[in-house]
Length: 229
Image (tube, rainbow, N blue to C red; front, side):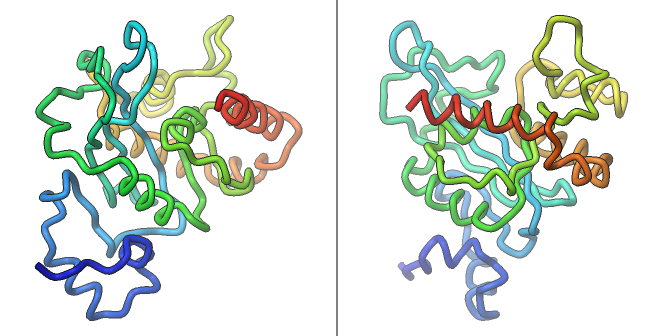
């Protein structure tokens, strides 16, 4: 079997030569528990993860699936992940994860390395993204690269009274009149939804990016993540 190039080279498509790209396009990534499209990586990406429950009463989170879409909401990465701890709760009704999904999953350390390669130097869109970064154990993300739809001030008017943020489901329904998460979640759909929200309000998003209302909320969210590890 041919050896694949280093995963960081694989996923940084703009740095690959044509021969490497052609080889990778012919490779069946489904054998490694998922899907990668190196041709369509963009400078702005959106990420979402699904978790299963581990630890006491299944209250701990373990990464089970990670999905990334490009700025056109097209999937560029979607992999299930092997969980090396005892799974107490698959949370199927919410996560959509079933035991058979993880049987062919990729090893966690490989998924983490690949995700780090994809997001390096790119703007990352997500909804309450600190939870995704936490389960991936990614701490070295500069604030300037994060666009979190959960903390965007322009969406405050959609919040329900007493809620800290609006859910992704509510934002999609109120802004686009689109129902998502009908039943269980799908991380590709959720990542694409976050990107749609960002794209629709991109100019306002970037204008408010460093305002006093947006920055402290994001920094507080990331700080809470760092302190929890």
